[in-house]
Image 1 (spheres, rainbow, N blue to C red):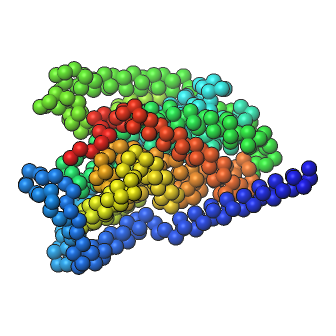
Image 2: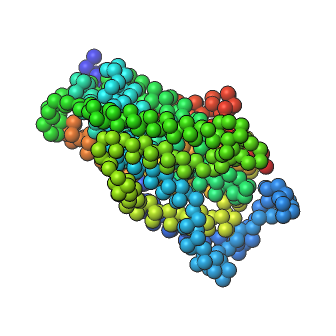
Image 3: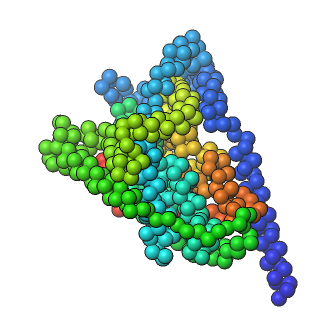
Length: 531
């Protein structure tokens, strides 16, 4: 018996050492990468140099696009255009500003964030999350925490800063292990990042990049912010269910009973403060105002003669309503946010609203800097035709290998998850990968909307085990309150079951939803691309 126990212990130690070495390798590789801003600057320069080399050797592929209105022949050739020339230099210097100002995700994200800022700074989002979690039954509190975490990604850092420490405190107050609560919230906020009930700032951010990539194959293709909404809506409940099961069946039993002596600080009994009577009244009025806004918007799109339906076809697809969805995101957050603030006393007049918007904008300096260089990279990629050339050759390779069916998305999701370990920003990763994989997968018959939905799965599920994720250090510091000397490897090991189950379950849901039930991933979204 002792020999068996020793061999098991040695095996566990060996596996732990192997896992630690793997994590150390991931961290080392991630640390080799420069800052995302620097990375995009370097990639832009690389594109210029590569275009010069390939242009010198006259690299070209057959044009995969159909005859267009200008009579372009389908059997024409697309050549790599060199930017290492007088004409290339002229185009770079004259397009530097317009590349930035014309970058689709920039304006849409800024407008959407203005509305979210009002709801966040008035206290509406924080109070709504608190009410959701604290009003849940003891059996339903885990689901409520994961669910609240998923919904909180509407206002980026709110879930990380507010919900995750709150979840640990709630579990502690219920006599459960606080790290299990922290893990459940972290899983919802980060591994469930792309799912949501409402359209958020990530939707226009990604759709703008997807549309630009799709234009390499079809210059007239439109990808709206709403194109993944159906799938992400149902994913919210599915991911919350998976997160609950992993927490209660795997993570919490593995953690065992919490011993306060293991904490790095002296923990007092946690008393959660539910919303006050005034906050409840403010929530109710905000909910009524949201329902009123939704009712008014419904009058513009539900009736057959709705003023925001397509003026020619009378359909919802391609309508001004869908094209202007970012404006409605702004309104749907700003109005209830102000109503809540007015009733709760956190906002008194228009000056408070403007202050909330300006505070939100002041935190976007890094994002705007990133967008400037990302916009140059995307523009250079388009000008040189490198994206189209790589897409045609990649599509030919996939077809030669027989990987031109739905199974290709399994590899695509896995690739996105692995890349996410070192390049944690959703927009940064998609700006790099979309110009290659969107055209490539379009050429083997899949629509950009479906490709983007698959990307969002891969980009989300490995966030919780990515050392380069911007909030990882913050979560580590929060966890160390409840277990002294807790290291990064311990945190990643705790979160790894979420990543693995989410990857498997969410990919299966994607396959069933899209290819078994033939359901669209969003309003008017196609599954297959037809030129």
